[in-house]
Each structure stands twice: as structure tokens, then as C-alpha cells.
Amino acid sequence: MLTEFMKTYREHQNDLATKYHGKFVLISSNGVLGTFPSRTDAYWGAIDDQNLVPGEFLIRECVFPEEERPVVFYTNVK
Image 1 (cartoon, helix red, strand yellow):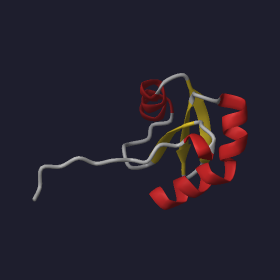
Image 2 (tube, one colour):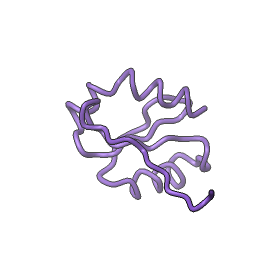
Image 3 (cartoon, one colour):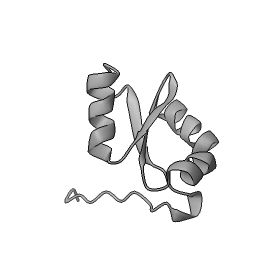
Image 4 (cartoon, helix red, strand yellow):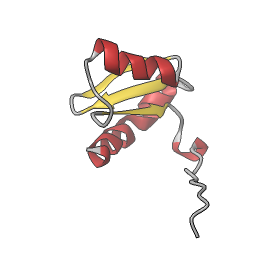
């Protein structure tokens, strides 16, 4: 699912960044469901308004590809 959601985001990324730069987009198997002013608003929009459960949606910030920052995971596992 995540791969499909990211594919949808990438296909629309430049358009979303142009229209909604800095806002957060909600994506599910039904496509782009909306944009929100914050990640928290997007989350509750998915849960309350769309009746989705975690794992059924993706929330991404609307930025241009060159503005993306790599995801870094820190762990104390040796």
C-alpha cells in the first residue's frame, strides 16, 4: 500500500507543491483526498472524516522534490 500511495504522491507532487506548498496532503487507495494546514489535521481528517485506520493512508508535506529531506532513523541497536 505504501508504495502505491507514494506513487500517487510522486505523480502529483509538482502540482500539489505549486498549489499547496507547505500544507499536508492525505492520500489513500482512493487517491488524493485533500490537503490540510497541519499533519495533525490531516491525520484527524483521515480518521474522523474518511473513516480510515492507520496503515490505510499516507500524509505527506507538499514540497518540491528538491526541498525534500531524507528520513533518518536513530536507534541504539548495535
